[in-house]
Length: 184
Image (cartoon, rainbow, N blue to C red; front, side, top):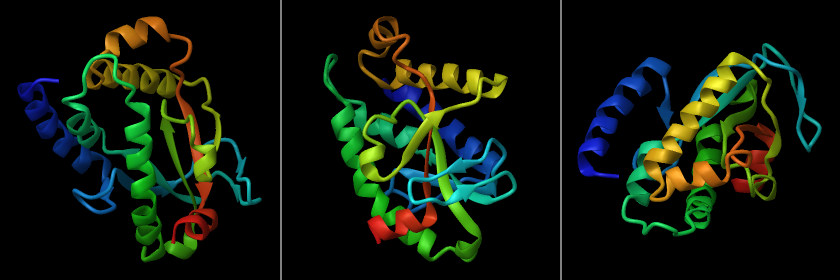
């Protein structure tokens, strides 16, 4: 990705963050940004038995895609990028757990949840994985994430052509208790 495109993305990212109320877990040192909101969707049960139902408070997880793009900027085409990204996610999880542990509304937060292509390996990190509902919003999000892959990955266009059916958006979620147990 060239420097001009990254500069434009930085500007857009700042606007996006303000509009969505995203908070940094730890700016510059953590791959996650979050927003506290009420869950809207079908009830989910986590592996440790916590039931997340419509109206429950959750932290919506967002990977800081700009940071990922900057991290992957100099990767050679054909490079396997999943392992460094997974390492960065794994390195960021203890900081996410500290953020949640110190959150003023911690007792109300039932779980954390995100929507991503990067769900392989999530179960080993304590997350549950499920399909997203077939709504217009999630179809849009799938196209948006494919656009990000095309922009960020040195072989993004090739991957999209070769793995079209493999790149499907999934929901990852974990209870607050499980996150704190594993990563604090």
